[in-house]
Structures are given as C-alpha cells and as structure tokens.
Image (cartoon, rainbow, N blue to C red; front, side, top):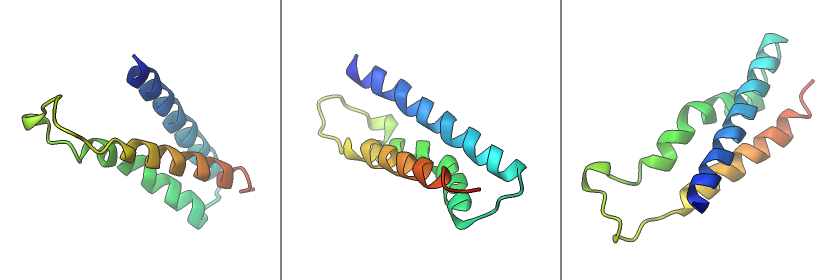
Length: 86
C-alpha cells in the first residue's frame, strides 16, 4: 500500500513538472533548466521501470528501488529551479 501511495505522489510530481514546463514554454522561456525538465519528463518513467525486466519479474528477487527515489528528487529539484524562471 505504501508503494501505491508513493507512486500516486510521484505521478502528481510529474504532472506538476509537466504543467510548469508547458507554462514556461508557452511564455517563450527556453532555458537550460526548462530543457532539462522537458527531458526528464520524457525519461522518468523509463528510468524507474527499466532496471526491472518485467518478463522475468520475480517478487522474491532483490531489486534496486532507489532509482524512483533519485528521479523523485530530480523532479523536485527541477520544480524549485523552474520557480526561479521568469
């Protein structure tokens, strides 16, 4: 249940990032931070799910679960940086 709750929160972070990037692009703001955020939007889900081969997904096998945490921190850091974009 905890993983489900966290995944919902992660989705909300991605929505916030998507909306912020769209707003800045609409205003004609094209900075390196906006480009990094747009790139993360296209890569985030794959980065989190890629380490796990779903065809051979075994629940008892150890998995690196830190990738989702790393991506979450990147999203939050970018949201903070984007707040400084005018």
